[in-house]
Length: 160
Image 1 (cartoon, rainbow, N blue to C red):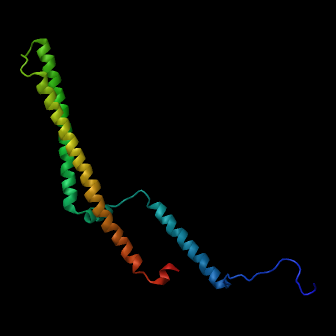
Image 2: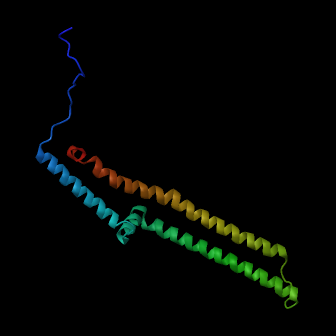
Image 3: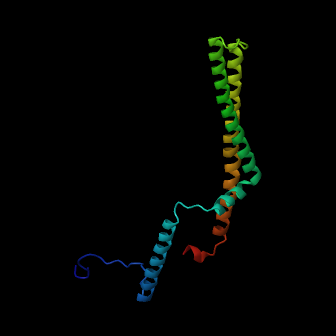
């Protein structure tokens, strides 16, 4: 029929027309954003002490002190275990050479070594448990609340 248009149908677009001023402002924003990204790349890998202090504050200085104490105790137990093995080995060498009489049985040495290993496992589990259960949970709660609070209270223009 004659009233029908031929060819593709043009549909209205809902894109907003931009003036040259708006386009120019968008280009300036893109340049500013690129500069901010460049600054972030430059500072990559450098974490200041204020970041560590903020993180420890969010975790709690008491929790950090207890964690450091438990970690130091664990290191002391590991050193004690190595010293015990050294003493046990030197005692076996000396008694085999006839330099010192054999005073303790092998059960004594093995039982004490097992006690050292058990103490090391308990302190290691304590340090891991303390850090994962209490410190990470508390730190994440405070840090995420500090990040979410300004985002929720931001004006709607922030999201445009």
